[in-house]
Length: 465
Ligand code: ADP
Ligand code: MG
Image (cartoon, rainbow, N blue to C red):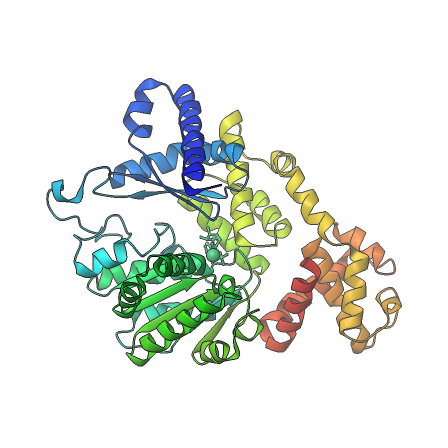
């Protein structure tokens, strides 16, 4: 499909979403709140919509975001989130705009951008839109992400380059993009004169290829080489395309040599990047590599609390604990699950309950369950620690087998929806309190022993893959 065809399809979908909403909310509300929305971008499952004022953004987000998301998902199952942001010159050409737009000083939250400067124009057509919720103050810090968070803050706050590049590395949906956006928001708020460019690696390639085609590579290079901070998200996608890699490498070196900051994210470590040349790999490894580990139960619970608070909804503690226990894969899924539960409660007009949660998330919970069985976990863990699978069921209590057994119990709890007694039964008929103890023990060890934490993490990733 050509670009025009894609655009047309998106327009049709947008029309349909609006049409549905119009019927649901009535003409008056539609005219005041929904009609002014402008669809800006559909990218990576994220729909970006702009509105002219901050008030409007808050209102639309509070009242219509869930419905917008659900309606979009009905149009396109790939859609994961809808985000509303403020664009002061929304629908109006820049020259007609009145006074300068300002950032919101009180909250520091990004609401509008300063008047375009030269760097702004460069960034305007290069940098991708940012999610206004992805700020530092909305990022919940816990053991698995504290290092990456601290590193991101350092980069955002430093006036000189603390480490180059900062390489954020972690699994899908664990907060890489959030941290990257947070860096950009921070810099734009504190020091708008600095040029920060944030874009996906895919877009970088696309721009570069287009520049090649239009024989415009000199301009392309100049644009990149005159910036203060370059942030490239999801760099794992850059692998394989040699010419782009080469260009990236040169741009990269030029910026580093000029003392400009580079921030990169990837779901693989620099050494594991496929199809990336050794030179680029070693250059990527030169700075600080900050790993975001899989979430812990505590972090998931913290995130749920924070999200519920932001959405100003009351979610019973039992429901949050249930979600934090069951949705372990990543934060995006966790957030999605909470949104579904909240949207459902609002639609049917009932309070959120554990029963309703289990019902609404039935498919998701089943899917999580189907992913891996206790037997598979026992086999992989036994192999990893070099013990016999039968030791998972045996009564032997030597540390060399007891510890792996505890890890397997812990992972069974994390990765399946089996109850504690069910898990106990599969481990040679042990009591549920034994399983509970194992889960606590492993959680404790994960906090205190880094290499143990890495082992567990490795196993988890392998089992989930
Ligand atoms: P990634 O880029 O690593 O795939 P994202 O940054 O897009 O993941 O995160 C997925 C979702 O989870 C986003 O909505 C993000 O705001 C949220 N999220 C991830 N980690 C955290 C956290 N520590 N605190 C709050 N929200 C988080
Ligand atoms: Mg991302």
